[in-house]
Figure 1: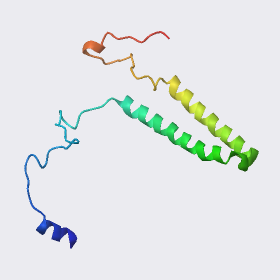
Figure 2: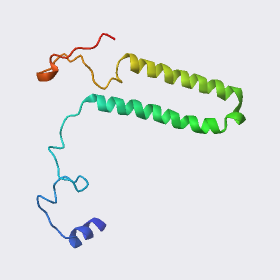
Figure 3: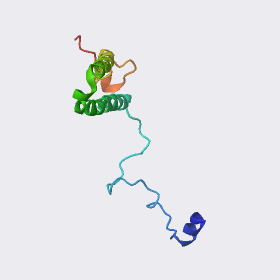
Length: 117
């Protein structure tokens, strides 16, 4: 009933401006359907994973004296698993912002090579 009432009462001002993308008062630049490099998402996910894990460390640190040795050992195991994950991400070079190996590169990226480090 509320949807029908809203449809009857609300002003109907349809047009190009009404259906355009709103970006905080700024003029829209280009299409909203542009493709982003997957590295943005990978780095964001890695950040979120480690950010959530650090949030878990704060309450543990506050009650550290009350929880005993068992909780300390459990937190060491937890931190070891996190460290192994970080090393795995680092070794796969997923944290490199600019990857120099581009097998299907075109244009200015075709001549780039990876540093031997």
